[in-house]
Length: 235
Image 1 (cartoon, rainbow, N blue to C red):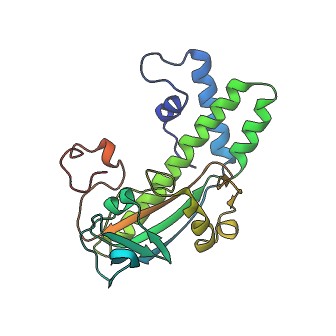
Image 2: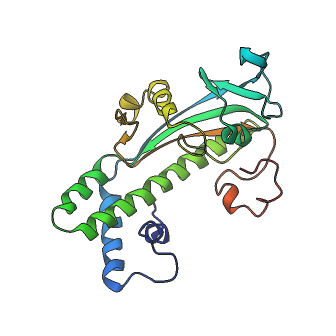
Image 3: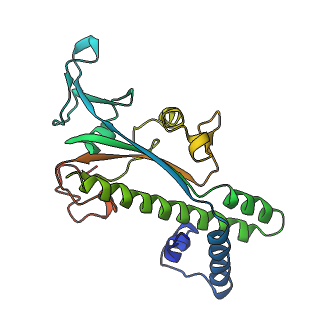
């Protein structure tokens, strides 16, 4: 059973501390959490790949291959699993990394089914299921993230905050590579639409950089870290 943080559900529902859910909504949240915990079918898949750092040179675009992690800057790009990355945001996240984990997780189609069923009679309940599903898939992603972190530490490596396609300038089109490389339809039952949206919708793809430098920032990420303003790895 996936543990769900009720405060996260409340946040997804749009409450920001100015007002609080009333008694009816609190009871509805508890009901939706319980039902989705019983019906969710969490699945995950991930694979680790070496990162090849390259220098961008002139009109050729790609210069000398580098097999060890190096400082990234505007004249660097990297490649992993056949994917060439020039995203400035992701390159900064991966600075100093020698390996990368590609992962995909889902809690299954049950959340979508409960939302559709509720939309006919009770839009508030449908909206609550959406919020619970969003909090649940993030919690499941955190659980897999921790598993990856522990496996990496056994090899003397440390994880950076996970980074998903569509964040910053990391293009959403990379979803197609995730689908193929991780064989998502077969391994976890997740497919992509023509507009690159995942089905089931409560699914997440992301990469996690691995480095021999311990920045201790694998979970909360830059926005929650008290070193955000001074850390050279901050996004």
